Figure: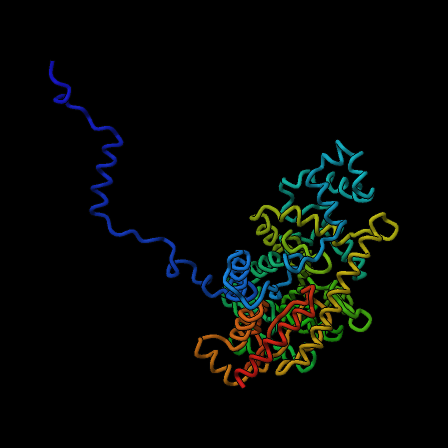
Length: 513
C-alpha cells in the first residue's frame, strides 16, 4: 500500500482561492477609494451651513472636555449654546409642554389606555386620554408608515387651523406634513428649481436656503433687508434683485420670505406683504413663505403676525387665483420647541395640478414623515381649549415660555446697545438677535492673516474665552463691510450670559484698538 504522503490530493477550494488571491495581489494596482473629495458630487462641496459649522463643532469639543473630570483648566465652566434655536437642548432646558408629552406617551404605549385604563386615569387628565385614543383610532401604531402626505385626519385639522387663522378656506389635499419645515423647504425647492434658475432670498437669511440652492446648482438672488430701518424689507431692494437676475439672464423662479425674520426677528407689515404679492404676480414668481415663527410675536397689538395666505386671499380675484404660494410651519419653534421630533407642514395654493402630482411623487419616495412629528403638528394646530381639563396648565406653561423669550430678547438687546462697538435692533418676534459688531481695522487685518472672516474670528475668540457659542453673521449674509453675530434669546441665565459677553467684548476692543 503506498504511503499516504505520496498519494495525490487535490487542493481544497479555500486553498485554491488563497493561491489565486496571492497571485492576484502581486499583480494588482494599488487600491483607490471610490469616494474622495475629487469624486463625490461637486455640489456637496459648495454647501455651507453656518449654524452647524466650525463654531458648533468646536463648542461640542469643549463640552466633551468639560465632561472629563480631569480636563485641563478652561476659562469657563460650561458651554452656552446660543447658536441655534433648539429650546429643549441640554443647557437651555425649556421644559416640554405637559399636554404634549402626556398624549405622545400614551400613543407610544397604547396598552396603558386600553388594557390599564384605571391606571391611566390616575396619571392622566381625561381629555388627554380621549385625545390619545382618538389619534390612535386614526393612526394605529406610531411604528407604522402613514400616507406619504401624512395622516388625513391631521391634515384636516391643519386645514381647519389655517382657515380659523386667516378667515379663508384651506383644502387638506393641498397640505403636506413633513419632517420639519426644513424638509418641506428642500422638497419644494427641489421640485421647483432647475440648474441655473434664480431664487430671491433675503440677506441676512437662514442658511438652509443658500445651502439648498448650492446643492441644486440654482442661483441665489439676494435682496437686502434694511438694518437702519429695524430690518424692514425695502420694495426697491426686491426690484433691484429682479433686475439683477434679468441682467444675468436667469429665469427668476422663486422668492423666499422669512416672516418673522430669522436671524433678524423683524415682522412684515401688511403693506409690504401686499407689495410682495403684486411683484410675484407681475413677474410670475412662486412665493415661498417661511412662517415657522408665527407664534413667536412679542407685541401682537403693534405688529401682529399676518400670513401670506391671508394677504393673498384678500387681493383682487385675478391675483388671488393666480399667484403660486407655498407656506411652511413647524413644531420646532413657537412655544413647543420640539425640534428633535421633526414635524411640520406646508400648504400649496394655486399650484398646477400636474405639479402637485410631482410634489406628491417626491414625498412618496421618502414613504412618510415621522409619525411622532405628525402627532406634534396635530397638537400644535389643535391645542387644549378653554374648558378642557388640561387647558389651565397648558396656558400657564405656554404663557411662561412666551414671556420668558420676550423678556430675554428685550433685555439682551438693551445690554448689547450699551456695549462698546455693538448696536442691536430689538426683535419683534422669532427667537434671535442679530447685533452688529464694529470690528476694529486691526482685528479685520488679523482675521485676514488667519484666512477667516472678521466676525468668524470674533465668534471663535468669544467661544474660547467665555464658552458662548454664537454664529457669525457672514454665515447668514450681510451688507459688505458690516459684521454681525446671531444669538438666541433662549439662554435661561441672561445676566450671566451678558456678563461674560460684556467682559470679552471690552477686552477684544481694547486688544485691537
